[in-house]
Image (cartoon, rainbow, N blue to C red; front, top):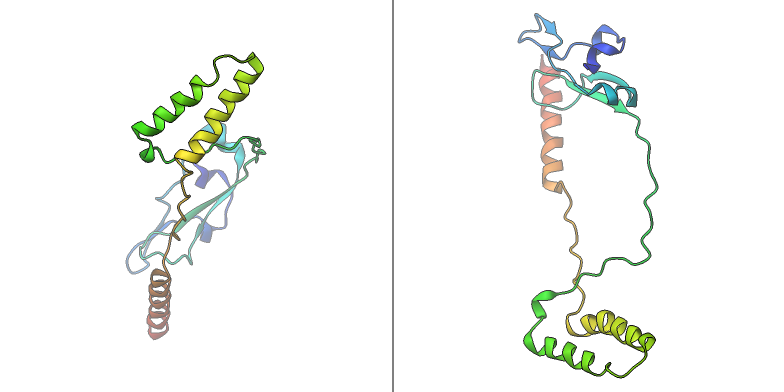
Length: 158
C-alpha cells in the first residue's frame, strides 16, 4: 500500500522531486507498507526544509506503535571471562564436586548451587561492559552546521 497517496495533503506536501531550474515538480518517492501495518500510520508527508543535499524531498511518515512492558528478569544474565578458564580451574571444580559425595539431597543441591554460582565468579571474574560510543561526533555536527550556513548564504545571494 502506498502511504503518500492515501492521505489528503496540501499540494506543497505532495511532491517529492523538483526538476533542475524548478520547472517541474513530481511525486516519485513513496513509502510502501503492507496492508496489515496501514492502520498504524497516522500521516505521511514531505519535509521540504530538510537539510539533504539532493533535489529529492524527504518523505516522512508518523507511526503509532503500542508499547509493551518488558518482563523484568529477576536473574540477570551474568557473563564470565571464559578466556581465563584453564586446566587448574577445572580441577578445582572437580575437587568441589568430590566433597559432596556423602550428603543429603538438599545439601547436595546447595553445594552444586554454590559451585555453579560462586566458583565461576571467583575463578573467572565478570566481563566489564563496554561503553557505547556516540553515533555522531562533534566534528560531524560542526561540519553540518557550516554546510547549513553556506547554503543560507548562497540562497541570500540569489
